[in-house]
Image (cartoon, rainbow, N blue to C red; front, side):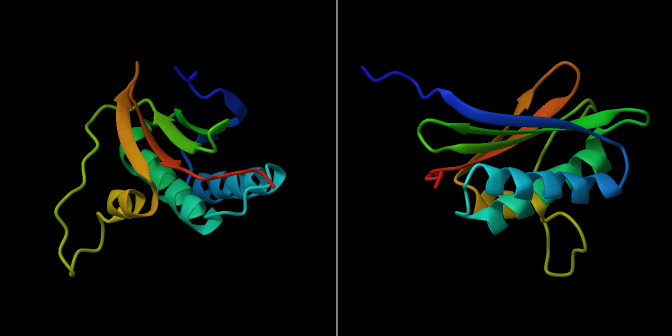
Length: 137
C-alpha cells in the first residue's frame, strides 16, 4: 500500500475586502511559483487565483472580513490553490449565455485545472483547484 502524498511546501496569506487584493494575491502566487521552481501552467494557475479571489470578494467576504489564499505543493507534484471566505452561500456554476457579462469564473477554473471543488468550513467555505504534474526545477 502506498503512503499518501506529503505536503512539500505551503504558503498562506490573508487579504482584506478590497478590489486591489485580487492583484496582490496574483502577485504572491507568481512569486511563489517562481520561488518553488514551478513554471508549468503558471498562466492557468494565475488565472484561477484571480477568478477564485474575485468570487470570494464579490460573493463571500462580508464587510470587515478577509479571505485567505493557500498554496500548497505535495510530494506527488500536485499544486493546490484554495481560497477561503467567511460568507454564506453556495458555490455554483451559473448558466451563462454568449451575451452574459458575468458568471464564467468557475467555468474557467473547471476548464483550466485538473480538479476543483468546494468544502464547507465554519464560517463560510473554501473553493479549491488542483494542478497535477508540477515538479520543482
